[in-house]
Image 1: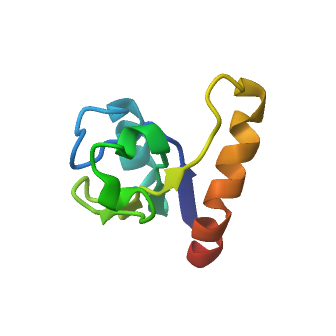
Image 2: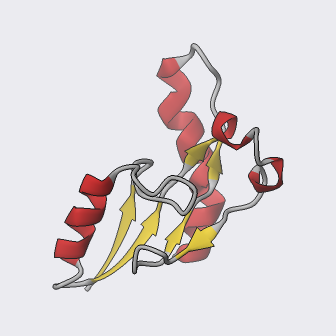
Length: 97
C-alpha cells in the first residue's frame, strides 16, 4: 500500500521542529505502507528565500521523501484559502500521481 500525506505541518530542513507530531504519525504508518509527503508552504513564508517561490524543494532528511511546494492565497479571505491551496497544488499532485 502507498500513502500520500498532504499537510502543511511537517518538518523541513529549515524548520525541523514544525509539525513533529505528524512525523510521528508517518513513522507509525510507514510500518504498514510506503509513505510520501507533500507539505505546502505559504508564499509569504518564502519571501526571505525568493528562489523557492516558484519551485518545490524536496528533502528526505526525516527519512521520508517530502516535497515542499509553494501555495498561493489571498490574505484576509479565509473563505478562499482552501480553494487557493488546492489550485496551487494541482500541478504538483498530478506529477506525483
